Amino acid sequence: MAKWREVGRRIDALGEISVILTAMRSLAFIEVRRLADSVGYGRDMVAAIETAIADLSTHFPGDLPSQETEFEVLVALGSERGLCGDLNDAVAAALGQEAMVPGDQLLAVGARLGQLLDERGIAHRTLPGPAVAEDMPQALAGIVAAIGDLTRTRGRPLFGLRVVHMDDRGSMLTRVILPLPALPRVAHWRSRPDTLLKPRPLYAALIDHYVFTALQVALRTSLLAENRKRLDQMGAALDRLKERLEALGRDRRRARQEAITEEIEVILLGALPAALPAVADRPD
Image (cartoon, rainbow, N blue to C red; front, side, top):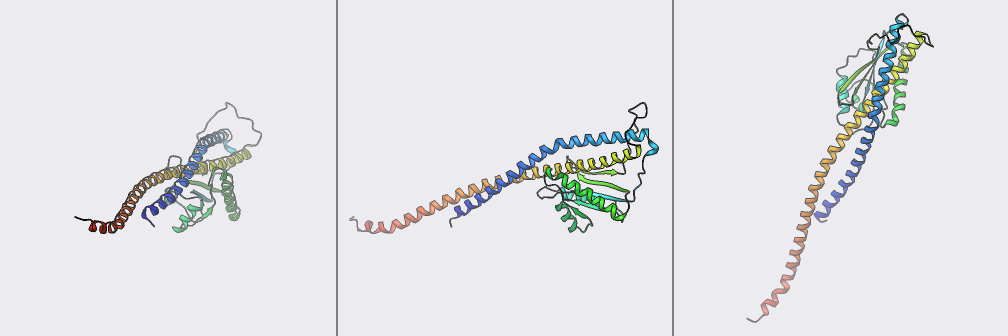
């Protein structure tokens, strides 16, 4: 097969890869645009719940349940899919900085992160992570169910909860969800407010809502960071692929010119022996 034809086949194959990478980059861009606003809204909601808890603790300080913990759950948020740069490596490295004691449980969210922790011999339980925003409810339900299994199995409902993930700026973040961080005492009302629920069950309901919302925001932030990493990686891959296609295009043109030159030489060499007798027989 002519060399220029072989190079042409490689160009066609790389062109198909370029189409796939372009589609993946477009999907990552769409996910980034969809998640960016929802992360901001979620943070505002978490702040509002924290304010409500602070209000409650200010006016009903003696009715609040204990914040003591008997074991801790560490949730590490990685990726379910690949092609997201160093996200999973960064999460695994951050876990090495987290203090854990016997009895604590590590939940790795994302198949790729779970595989990486298996390779490094880090004990954990792998949970499915979200590949797209629509997978968020299932992933969140899986985390909540896993935490519920732990509390039922151990018979100890008092637990701490930390989440390790990459934030939307590409930095690693460890958020302590339980026990509640120290909240500033506030007094939005001059007098004690009337509540439909008693302070203790109201506080418990707010805590449940706070934990659920904080986990959801962490998942969305991690998925946003993952897609930004994927967007950058796809962009860099397409740039390198473009350079490679341009180089192969030059190689194909050069090989085609060489093939044409060889064909002309063959034609000339084939015509030369037939012309020699005529030249020899020509009278001087």
